[in-house]
Image 1 (cartoon, one colour):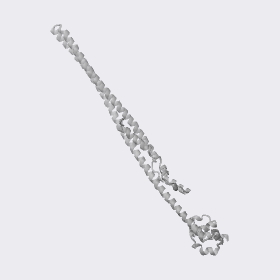
Image 2 (tube, rainbow, N blue to C red):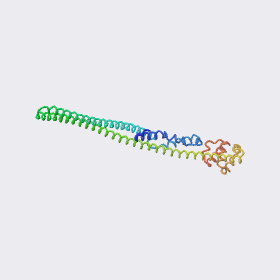
Image 3 (tube, rainbow, N blue to C red):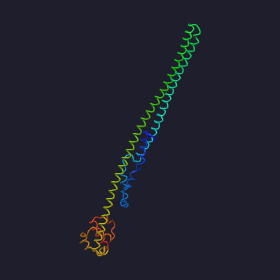
Image 4 (cartoon, rainbow, N blue to C red):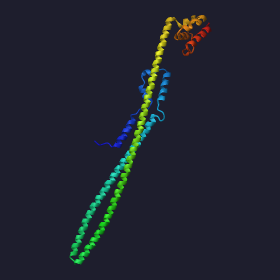
Length: 296
């Protein structure tokens, strides 16, 4: 199984973390709210307001996530460039090594060939006078030395050039690797920021949902209490409408204050007083008296 490269692994991890993040806090809130939390229109408006308040300040979670994704893609491209540069550096190094080996082999062969030439020249020269032999030997050796020196100079220049190219390529590869690491670190930091922002939004939305659910439950309890009070008022008074019809100025002035607010609400409903649910007990008494005087 091939071993994964560290830089490529970090880039894949950052991208996977970003893809698994929720798109926004509203989605998280919709997953947390129970079915009982849905209620009247005013409850829905409170819910939307709570979602807006729960959204993170400054850049949105989506913006942070997009920024993190872009940083991860830049890091990915930087990593690919660094790997390509490293491969090119390796090829340059291999080429320099092959050139050096080829030059060494060629020099060894040249030395052997020159040695054979010298020996051949010496053998031929021995047939002549000793002075002629010495002259031929010296001339042959001088030619060999000159050719060997020229070829050695060329070989050294080629080797140095190849080594220089390899060093330049390796330096470029190191720079690209360092840049890729920096971009990966930036991508990781942005991904962490986006994750933290999403978590904070989810926690705030969950808190708001719990508060709204508690409010809705309290409203339901209040409604049950009002219904129970209305039922008790019905037992005391056979009919709110009949009670309203029997009311005269003296009765109203005499005992309306002794009734509960729930009973007064029933009386107000019987005589069709508008806005009765928003009135206090004292205001209900006043409204009922006014309406009774009008009907009489």
